[in-house]
Figure 1 (cartoon, rainbow, N blue to C red):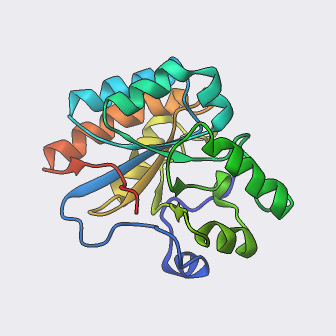
Figure 2 (cartoon, rainbow, N blue to C red; figure 1 turned 90 degrees about the vertical axis):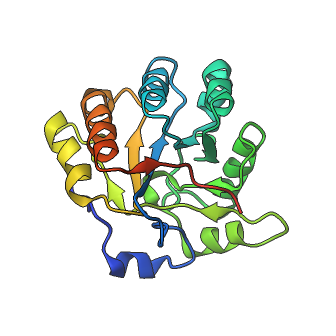
Length: 209
């Protein structure tokens, strides 16, 4: 499986009207979690974040919010940010624009947020333009570091190293609160929180416009 752990500058320029990192942040990391909420795995993530008084951003699938309303409510109650990740985890490159935008609108019924992250990071120029337009434009959040927790070919230790070696002040880091990622997440997340906390970092959520 090919993917870029650290997003290079040329990729950021391809979709420039998006948030890839938060420049100017001093010893702050922005942890984000895609594909939840999941009753057990998201609970694990929230418990770990509590240990460090850490805040994060959860990009939720609308269908999972409907199925797990209590854990979604816990995310909000503990003052984390939430974002829209479509209703059904659609790939923008493989979905007609109108159907893709309607799916995001459906998810908005359950996720009150102007933050949006496209599943797989795949979004067309037209979809992107539409989401950024209108009276209530979305703030499209990409990332600067991928943990690779979704990659079953890497070890939990490698997943952890992906973040420890590449994250820096202002980085937006992607994890997944999903069953596929859990074997690597349950090792890497505590390691990342511990390492960067000891380095004097804080963990903050991404704020809406």
